[in-house]
Length: 147
Image (tube, rainbow, N blue to C red):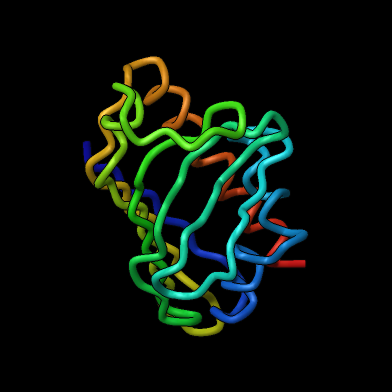
C-alpha cells in the first residue's frame, strides 16, 4: 500500500517540525488516531521509537532519516501489544519494513507537509480507519501550528 497526504500550513517549517515532534503537541495532533498517543524516543537518526497509546499498544519503529525541519522517516519494525514488543506475529510482519515519511517544504511564509506511507499491509478495516484519521490529524496539526 502506498498513500500520500498533503497539507499547507500557515507557519514556517521550524514551527511545523516542532509541532509534529513536540512532547506536548504530538499527543494533540495524533489524537484522531488514538487518544493518549505518545512517542517515546530521543528523535535521533538510528534511534528506536515506541508509538504507544494509554494501554501500551502501538508500533515499534526506527528513525531511518532525520533532517531537522525538512524530513523525518520512520521504518516500522513491529508492534507493541500490552507493553510487549512483538516482531513475529502475523500483524507485526504486516507492518515490518513499511515506511512513514514526513517532508516539509517551504512555500513562501507557509509550509507544505507531505506524508508518505509505503508498504503497510493491514486489514481493510484498519486501513479504512487510518485513511479517515489522517486528514483529521493533519487538520489538528495545522490548527496547533498556526497558533
